[in-house]
Image 1 (cartoon, helix red, strand yellow):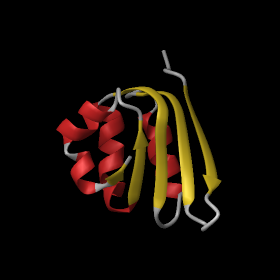
Image 2 (spheres, helix red, strand yellow):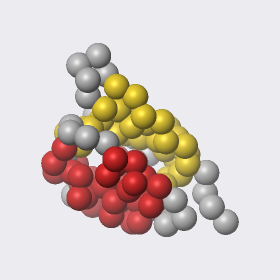
Image 3 (spheres, one colour):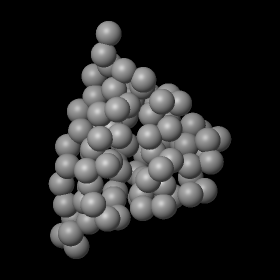
Image 4 (tube, one colour):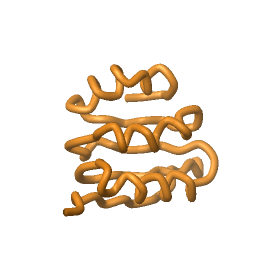
Length: 93
């Protein structure tokens, strides 16, 4: 069964791409996130404020983009992002 995930792309006034994710990110939908990250040019804000769950499959698609990511995450995800080391490689809020 596929876990619900909604991805919405937008732009900040300065032109920076913003990708907003809502739902859960796991092995059933991580490739959708990977494709969206691959399609987004330049620096990228990834808003995970409304992501309730992020597993290792989801984390694995974030690492190749870490140098260009600014992460916005809810407190539930902070331990996962920190333990994985992703917060050391990205800008995060």
